[in-house]
Image (cartoon, rainbow, N blue to C red):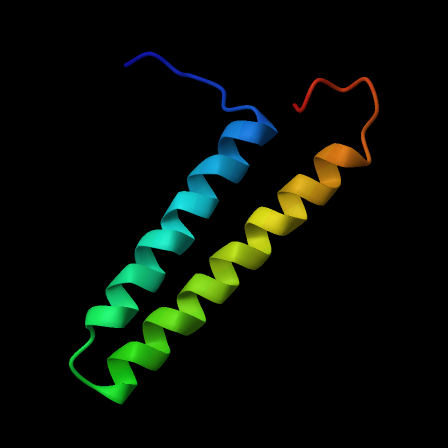
Length: 65
């Protein structure tokens, strides 16, 4: 198995896509519990994406790694 390193930008993009997928699933949830769980997970993942993005902005010349 080949190891591949993800840049901060790629991590941010993956987390953002995951949050969007969770939000889309929430719209299809059959119960309030399912809807709330998926929306909460989406908010958490989106928060992680924001943290990665802000961290990469605070690292001048780092190249996003």
